[in-house]
Amino acid sequence: MSQQLAVTKRADDYSAWYNEIVKKAELAENSAVRGCMVIKPYGFAIWERMQRILDDMFKETGHVNASFPLFIPKSFLTKEAAHIEGFAKECAVVTHYRLKNAPDGSGVIVDPEAKLEEELIVRPTSETVIWSTYKNWIQSYRDLPILINQWANVVRWEMRTRLFLRTAEFHWQEGHTAHATAQEAVEETLRMLEVYADFAENTMAIPVIKGKKTDNERFAGAVDTYCIEALMQDGKALQAGTSHFLGQNFARAFDVKFATKEGGLELVWGTSWGVSTRLIGALIMTHSDDEGLVLPPRLAPTQVVIVPIHKGEADLESIAEAIKPLLAEFKKMGIRVLFDKRDTLRPGFKFAEWEQKGVPIRLAIGARDLQNQTVEVARRDNKTKETKPFQNIATYIQVLLEEIQSNLFERARLFREGKTTRVENFEDFQKILNEKGGFIAAHWDGTTETEERIKELTKATIRCIPLDAQAESGQCILTGKPSQKRVLFARAY
RNA sequence: CGGGGUGUAGCGCAGUCCGGUUAGCGCACCUGCUUUGGGAGCAGGGGGUCGCAAGUUCGAAUCUUGCCUCCCCGACCA
Image (cartoon, rainbow, N blue to C red; front, side):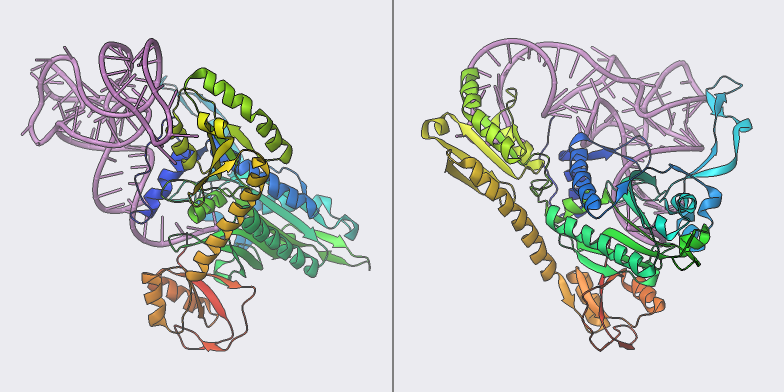
């Protein structure tokens, strides 16, 4: 309940600022379990909105939900060579299935008698267990495509964690589809990338670059990995979603074949795609300011908060009575409104609290307003206040919510444009990276060696090869070798 | 996993070097009154295995050893 002033400013210590936003907006906190977070009700309400909107988008593109096991037999994980190599270093392993009382009475111990025949891995992702299942489901081209999504939690044993951005356990959705042709699978991969970009930009108001990952940055087990990349306010990039064309890699590993129309037998083509609670981190670092969280209206659990300003209970009653029709009207319009009638807190406190929590619009109504038939309207995005006539206020708010939504997106887009720099040589590359940050569009000779060398020298990685990159002859900034298009570099989360 | 820091009331901290009254301060919490258009004021009150464990000592928040947490910096990653 109690809040303290957000003391740290973005300019002073960006990561301290981030941590304070997460705590003061009551989104999440560290848990008793190392690397795992507790997502608090307000943070989870945001995730639930994200889930609902994304889930509708998945359904509209023909997908259905299902649920696969939390545990994966070790042998499954090892079947696809690149896959196991990518995940081996961060797996939680279950080795026993029972505890017993310690002989010396000191508590409970793992029962050595209860060792599992085969260890189980807590899923870091579900390709293997799902493809082992698809093997049973697919015989004929008539069984294809399979378009399944699951909402789940996964575990990747990270060494260093940060709330939302990187936690040992995180929540996400993972889509897993199976197709008869490569073309169809590639189309699916790009379709879902498009869904993610649409969601990021239109719901979260986060502008993203759609692109393809380099071989080096590709998902373990994929043929091609596509991504959406966003730019945070500190000039670092953040991968906000990925969509993979798996080729026939997992079909081959799990022997998933189908009879073609022509009577042949072929391996199935696959895709997988996911976004996680990490998006909440992106949300914070895209829009929020030194006063706290800033939420885009389409995602905000509460879009409008009404704060009564009253002396005594009678005042509060008459305000409550006066806004009753307004609350009903908001509800009818589908606007999520909260009347903050807590009488133990003063208005100034409530103002500050709802600002920290990023509620897009605040309405304040006092005796003076009742007298004049007015209401004070305060915007969270640009901190402006105005007094409007009470009549027709709901319609005004409805329009204003949309305006705030597009203002947030436009502001973030302009920021990114300003922080995207075209660079022609390595000297400028380092200079821009250190002094300005952001995305750097530069030529690269296409080799993993050069990519890694640049990373060693500058800590910047190739975020993606943008899908809309123009063909343009140039020279690699490091080796001077010929290049046909620019790629996007940045330091990243 | 390596280097550095840290852990004392819900939160933020002092006390630890140099062991010794009943472990203290601010915020928050509870009660009452006055307040309420930008984080209220006064008065009273409650709350602590001093991260955990073992050891040294007449006596440990304070000294020793081990373990753990969280934060920052590096390597790894969505």
